[in-house]
Length: 108
Length: 202
Picture (cartoon, helix red, strand yellow):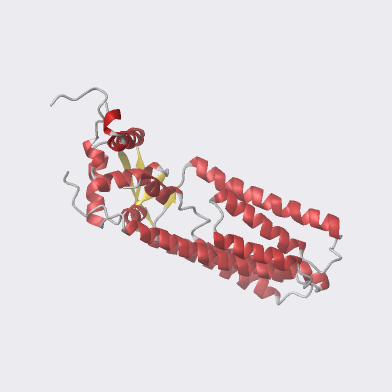
């Protein structure tokens, strides 16, 4: 099937719900630590870690690991590319939602 | 998935607002200010050494609790600026309202009212309104302090201003407890989002 130029295209790396949740939380802050992301997304340590690795590999987040009073601390921030792609992804989702809700006659 | 709810998870986690247990050390500090300003203050070792030490210990204890329980966030510069502006404007309103009250009622006020408590209540309402939005409990608690400050109960002579800090301290702690409850409920609501705990293989 041929895709039209104005068809919304979804970013596969971002579209996974847990990853989209992580990126959206990060888009509203400068950086957040692992515990905060766990609390806001409800993901287990292992799953959050796995998703963060994928996002880091994709260049969407920067992860900084430090020791605070001898305890490991993981701080995560969106990269410029991650911020831009997350915003674009939400725009695409909003566009798709608007089209789906529009009456059939108004659809392109 | 709700974009706004997720964004508010980060942006709505201010350092000195919903982390309401900070109201405990701040309330203790207010009580110390009141004790220090009494004409016959308690033993110096209490207000000069033990009180401040307990307040600082409470502050770091609360900071440690929030860091472990809810994690840590560095806010966008715009939001940091907003909190700073809220604190500065709130304090300016307090000073301005207090001075206005004294200009009208005399220095010290001749009427048995407390300009200090009334002005502080107005300043706190302004702070909350700018920092993150007024909640019902802020209005109830600080309007109660404001009204109490204007009732003819304050007949303590020279200690009137000092005593005003005790209801301010109590209101700060109570407002903080309500803020903390709201924080807990907010975080509890994130559990319902359910993003699935798959391993992100997609």
